[in-house]
Length: 556
Image (tube, rainbow, N blue to C red):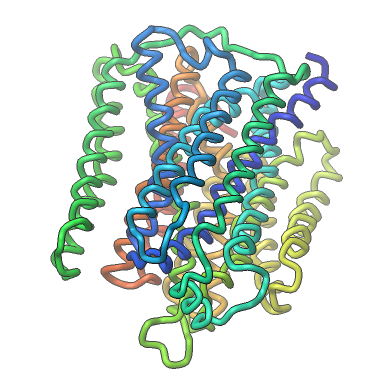
């Protein structure tokens, strides 16, 4: 393809990245609304993430199992273009079945909530197929050396979707008229604000998915590339992943069962639920490291899992997606007024917010990811060294201006200054990292630890904006982790990429775990989960550098 065709193809391709961001970020507003509407606890509300991100894992696993069965890469047989088309059609099905699932839904009808989860799961399955195809497709559209920068550019479009998604969803559900917390709760209780308001949104989204599928199918600029790599079987790895899936399914089934029987919400039953959530988390860690230990002794049947950089990267993707999602998914509960608060204060000691009022802050959080990804995409345009330095300073604040425009009049001057200061810290991080993936991960993981620590131990708006800064520090991690994890894999690169996509599972397990900790302890202290996630990412940056150095691979 010519450079012009590549640019046109890339422009067409990034449309799917926008869809992923729009739907995923909308969950940040949808989750607290579901908690209020269905009268469920914090753990149950996080099942929105469990259904959505769990579908990514299961979709990638099913592709791998099917490929193993026929001894050919299913996606490669289809080609990346067809893979995206099929994924869009699956997501369209999930969006369209939302209409009958929530038709005539009433406040407190928990059965409808589980139907919503099924629809979101189907949407997520389609996204899994799209993402598995789209990431290598973007890399194939030019020099592989600049593949990470093209992914950042696509990620910037994705993050624009995450920035406007919460605002659009909030307006559709709650309208544009400001409501007090009591007024909003009363309107939900009286069915004046209904879940059915999102029916037509998902009809529209489903139609857009179908239109995008048509655009991809008939686009002459988009070829249907396939990799030349042969499929590498890994039967032992497949078996271990199936066992992991069964363990997670059993653990969550037991937890779900405790919600269907008549039991008092005692500390004992809550600790019982937390135990099985912890087992789910531990099973992921044990499975991955067990596979690598066995593969180091006899690599036959383990495929890409014999490489330590991939195993470490799988847990890094798991942790990264988990922390990126859990910070914003639990934010709505953090900002709600405390039950015993006489002066309408939340856990941070600031003014309590209702479900409709948190949308600008969810937008700001995801906007932080957009800022970092726009900066990461600068290299795609090959600026001179001097211009690049200026762009590192200017682009973040231009992106911030877009966020402020989307949320015009929603932030105070003090809040704008606070977040602008957080952006300045991020810019310093980019200058210190000097485009090194390992340095970038070390610096931004450390900044994430500091930000989450302030959020847990401090109070007021400083604590709130420290937590919101997590979006800035997560922003650039995906391409860094992905690139380092598949470095040196050779013929196992495609398989390694599939394993990494599976680890989006972190978004399905970590937010519910934090939600249950919030139910048992407190919502602010539950953000220790985010601190621990960033600590692992810091450890990963050091460990993967060591692992690659032993293989004679320079990561600088």
